[in-house]
Image 1 (tube, rainbow, N blue to C red):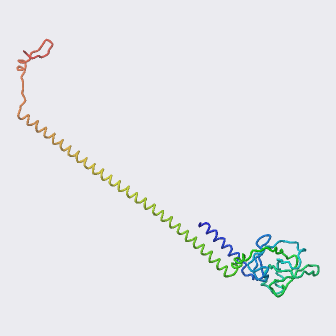
Image 2: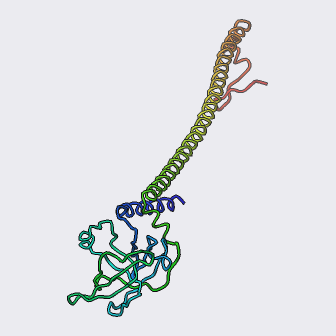
Length: 271
């Protein structure tokens, strides 16, 4: 959608520039050719009722020798004629009806006049300047939009429309950029929360391990202490036992009274 808006804005800008480049022309009896065969956009009411302002008239090429009086022809107005007759505001192209055909010094000229004009055109048109002949087919009022945008007001309007489209595209771009930025920030925030939770879990695990290690160390210390005390108690008991029962010492004579040697050198108890 934004691409379409940008393309339309660019197209309107090109139209405004192209229209502005020719807006200084006075188009009171003029037409513009935009195709080949050309299409004439009627810019005045000089040919009413046959052609009205805003009509799009289709003209076709024709052998100039076949042009006759009464034909509606489209022709170029050379700059020298505009300067010669002091009529610089006259448009470069005109579509009028042929009222008379004259040959002057071997050159064929056309006398032309608008159907809605009181007088004939102030210049003669050489036959070679004819662009084409009106075919009789037209589209009423279609060219009014083009004529409007060629006026200063129309150019201003097109410029405003282009600026509005550019502004909307800029706002849309900034909105998309802000959404993407917010999305990235949300992602970073979520990752930060996840990291914080992981750190908390790790801290809790370390704390539990430290508590377990501390408990284990205390148990070992208690066991060591108990072992030490047990050893001390054993020693004390051994000493007490020695004090209460002195060791019995047997002499050799006493032993011989009880045991006697055998043939094999062993001692056996006497019966």
